[in-house]
Picture 1 (cartoon, one colour):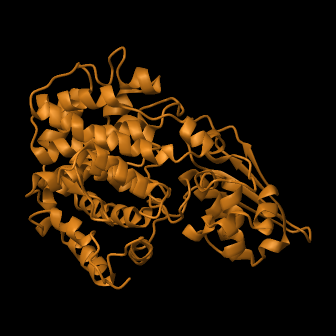
Picture 2: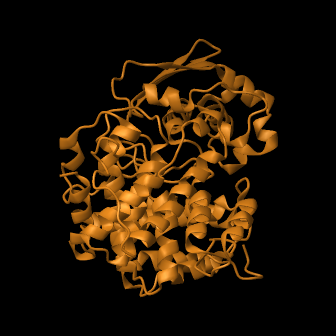
Length: 458
């Protein structure tokens, strides 16, 4: 039997009361984080054009776009909201799976929940935990490197699981939904290679497609059974070799949402180990960026594949977010990395570009095609000094987590950075609502808080 049946049973048979407290806590943390990133993502490229284009596909009042309040059909709202979560490369990530597990899931599930009405906070928590489980258990079983954009493809399965949970699908209906979602999956790594805005759009496409898949399955439409392990199923079509034992091991016992990492910096997670290491060494040894002669970073192959690209004076911001040498140089010069790192003046800063040119990235002999750690750094100073560090637990990971104060500060900065800020009072109410999410009767209340009111102070 195809393993999709095991995942469908996991989703349908697991309720909120079956979840351990650690999984519930993690779900709340990353729901709030994703909402905040989406608000800030309203400033991303082509957001208004995306919303206006989506309006051409129908004028139904299915769900709202966060931060703007535009009403769209639910699939279109899912597309726009998922795009806003991912377009700044600031959304949480499961490092072992190489998946942004909340992005497609939340954009799609909230659109479906708002359209449906009456979806409780307990149901949303369960849907989020189980959707992350589906995507990450599947993705960690892959023995192959990325050839398709896994945050989109695995994300579609996460979103389908989440919508199926909140809709109360039985196992057969959920398998049909997974099958229809599989038929619509998309995501090319070419967009990542070129730093194209299409990268973020691809998570939006899969969020839209998950809503459509669940709508179709919910009305009885069917699909093939070999969703994961068939000759043209997910693994053989999108991934390649996989480990079936690892695929199902721990299902129902190992809660993948507790393994998710925050992103403290708005850049590809594959850049974070280098940034983190550089900032740790600077803080420990007290040197300045101007004293740095050169930096050498030995990294796993995936790091080089994702972010080992040359710096250039005419970089587009999507390219720059995925350029490890640029973001590390900016972080060293400014003691951190914020969204202002991609302003036109910052991208063209001669001193930052010169330092980036002195950062060399080489591939180590790590045999894991999905590894993001360890990273070995050597910083050579102009006076002959040298400082070395190996980073195994990157800041934001479960082994080196952001504190509650730090992740709330990130949310508040993102809230205030929205093009139409929801206001401080609404932001604090949203924090409290997520903290007490299991008591909420209808999660559409959260969208009310994500919708700015005229005159709200930033």
